Each structure stands twice: as structure tokens, then as C-alpha cells.
Image 1 (cartoon, rainbow, N blue to C red):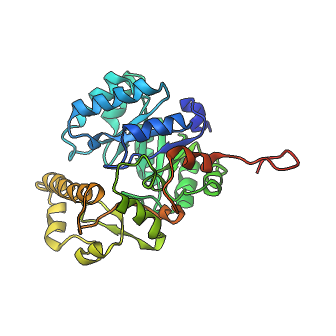
Image 2 (cartoon, rainbow, N blue to C red):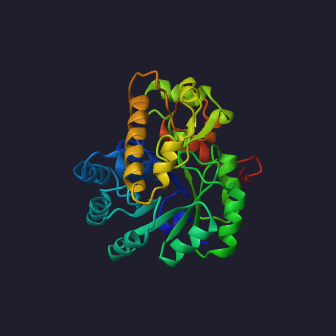
Image 3 (cartoon, one colour):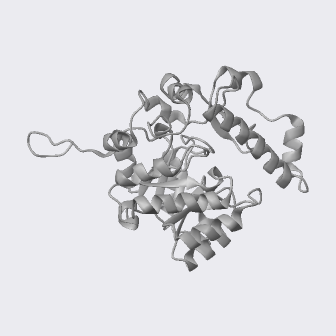
Length: 322
């Protein structure tokens, strides 16, 4: 199986994962210049004009490949415009999430753009493989944000045995040892997000960054209140106060065939506004997204240093690498 560094022509087989609200052009540029790649959620930009400008800004700084993450279900009313911009600006790859990627794959391939699809189980992986995907982002239960339900080892085993696409493991990698452990499973690469939230280049508040240092893996809980889809957050006092499960009425609307598209969109909008306030301003309503990998965050560092710690091999006295 080809590694991500061969597929994209980068130094290290790592994607700085697309993190809602957090990922931006500055973080992407720093990641690219550090020898890895990165992707930004298109929804991090209020308008498609801003999305186009961000892509142009990155391309002015570096020729290294990067991608855009698209939500491809019906709740994303801007999908067609976002996809068109990705094609016109010739991003290297698209990562699809939360829906059928078939049309996205078709249009991306017409423009020589690779498509990697988020998958949480074998059934969906087989569907996207049939649709022509170029790679699988194996989202495990160790992931931050919209996590999966299988462990990374279970998911990778299933995908390797039954699919022929490159596999990129998402979730649970927080240091060099874990990165190498994943790569030794014979996968193409890893997608890492949480440990970059507390980077110097990250745009979130100092309080959010400090929370990533002070809390640990045991403080990560799953909530359905933000988007209707299970999402991992830090179990702050405010999260404990509001609870992590939707009410019976919210669950009813979420399952109603006629209303669920609109309810999901409204839930997502409301939840993301809560996240935005907590990430960028002073508020007691502290809802901060993160994954169990905050266990490995001990200080605020530049992206370049985080990448170096993930990838550097030290030479032993006998000349071998460790």
C-alpha cells in the first residue's frame, strides 16, 4: 500500500486534521512548511468568497498540497458552491464527511482532485470504494469531534481485509510512538487534530488551549447536543450542567422524515455558535471540542515543533535510528 507521503509528495504521512472553527490558513501554511499536509473545513468560512481567498492565501505561501473538508449531506446548503471553488482553485484533495460522496467524487475527479472519505465502519467504506474514492479516513472511537464507534485496531483490521484503498487512521495519535505504531499496521498515513488545538498558531482562546493541557482523556465525553451527530467535547462544568443527550422532542425531530433535514441544519447552526463563542470569546458556556489525545498535550508549542516531535528519529551511537 502506498503511503500518504508518496500519494501527495510530502515529507511525512500526516494530515493536520480539519477541525471545525479551528483550522485556518495560517495553521495550514505552518503545517505544509513543516513537511505534512492539512485540510480545512469549508464551513470554517462564512462565505464562499472567504473560502476562495483562504485557498489563494495558502497557495501564495507554498506549493505544497493541502485539502478542503466538505460536509456532503443535505444539511450543507453551500455544498455545490464549495465544491465548485475547490475544483476551480485546484486543491490537492477533498475530505468528505457525513453523507454520500458520489457526486463530489465524480466532479473532483473531473478536475484531477483526490477524494478521501471519512468512514466509521466497513459497510460505508465499501460504498465509498464503489463510488470511486481515492482513500479512506478511518475515523475510530479515539477520534475527536465526530468520532466513530470502533477502536482504531478493529476498524483498520476490517478495512485492510476487505478494501483495496489507502487507509488513513484518524483518532488517538498524540506522540511519535503512537504515530509509528499506526504506520506499522501497514496503513497509508494518519490524521491528527487534537494535539494541534494548543499550538501557538491556533486561533482559539488561551483558556481553550489551557483546558487541553489541564484536562485528560478521562474528561472527554460524547454529546449529541451540538449537531445531532455524536461529538466529543471536554467535560467542563457547563457541559455537566446542560447534559450530553438530546431531549425526547429533539430526538423525535431528528428522526422525522419530513423535518429532520431542517432540524439537523438548525441544531448544527445552534451548536456551532456555542462552540464559536467558547473557542474565541469569554463565556461561562464552555463547550470545547477535543479528543482523548489531549492526554498528550502538556504545553503550548508551535506547529513546527509538534510535527518535529511526531516525526524525528534520533540516531543511536551505533548509527541506527530509534
